[in-house]
Length: 363
Image 1 (tube, rainbow, N blue to C red):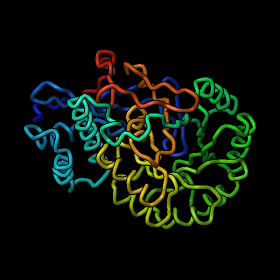
Image 2 (tube, one colour):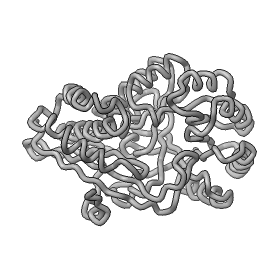
Image 3 (cartoon, helix red, strand yellow):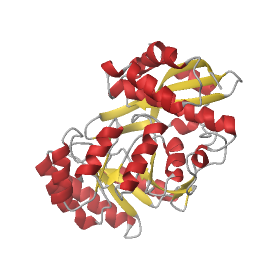
Image 4 (cartoon, rainbow, N blue to C red):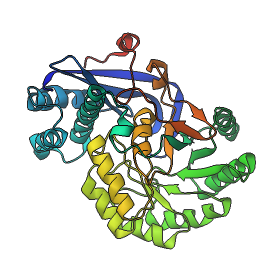
């Protein structure tokens, strides 16, 4: 099973409505970078990563110019070898950032190719723990009016969700508390509620917010401060009143290990599209299990449902409304608060590339 061909594409996907959080501001579109690997027998594997609007062209260039020569002609089944080959091939220009996004997309394609060649769904190939995965609706809704926020929540509950995440990090903590209180009153005690600050606060502000938010029965506070501040995360975890979810902006297994060893995170949150792909995501999940921690996910839910279904310490699958579902043949379905990992070979995501063609970015 030798890699014969690599095809990389870059698309700009407009969002159905403008989204917002405390650090990225208003988000009108996201970038999708896809990788299709074909082996000598014609079996294809699909991988992809994304950005929130910038950097996609550079990721595509890294894949085409720097990673493709490292993997073409190589045995597709030797994924650990290929991962190290890519890692050291671009190591000098980035142990994270654009480089790890590019590696992630290729690694996902390698695992999809392997599972398809074996005729197995990815979640079974990776361990096959439980195909039923609890899911939450991840709102990107900081600047929504309260009425819009609650209407969005009603639509998510009607769609089958039993857990809701909302953004915090408005100009004053009082505004956040008012919105969280209104949300809790609206959904009642039977629905799980998470909050996400998107790195907005200083450590002292995050501790104060954690203590105040706890009165509203919040499951976790996500990304309370910048990921670079490991001692700060430790303080927030120790001095605040809520469990901490973090990891969507961590880019290596080693970063996750430092967080877990230090007691800085309660819900490690690797994103398969930017942490190094399936290869690294699974290592983070197993490391979390060794630390007696549950693992959660960030974004790309059609991929993450397989990874969470594969491990015994899965907590929640984040489901994002990025608008990609209109280009996916079998969009994820939520029933009674959970998603089910599909039985299709590979990760089972088949993209409508004809429909995406009008959104191609050649830059």
